[in-house]
Length: 216
Image (cartoon, rainbow, N blue to C red; front, side, top):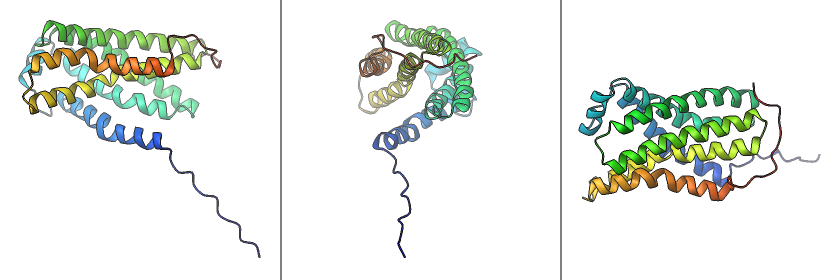
């Protein structure tokens, strides 16, 4: 009698493990903090309390919806092999990014931060909206490759909130000049990830796209 080996289950790739850890250790905690602040479940630091007083509707909506977008973006990306699920998640994610980006603009202007920092946060919101528009336009034309590149770019800009929180934590922990660190990080927290994605995916360079039926 011949023994046939059972098919082995494919081990997850290193990149999948790393991305999962990033999601669990960085993305999810940041989103949960945003939910807590938006729903008033956690005391606001003075700087954010001032923003809430100036923008009582935009600020909590921004925190809640942007936190949801932060979670939905990687989930939608992971579901790309299931077209129906990916499309449904993509629409919900696009709505969250749209609302989060639009509310980011008045919230940034209402911030107590320096002018340079406010400009960085405001520009981040604008860039987020532009990348969303380009990604949606690409998939409606059936240009999957361009859509994927700009969705990655949008995720890179969204990750800025994670690096900004880590930088501010480091500044307060090590006694660094907070205003200067915050002003610089308000730009670099999203420009650096965006630049890395731009170089890695070459989304500035037109490429032959994989065509599918445009989404409706």
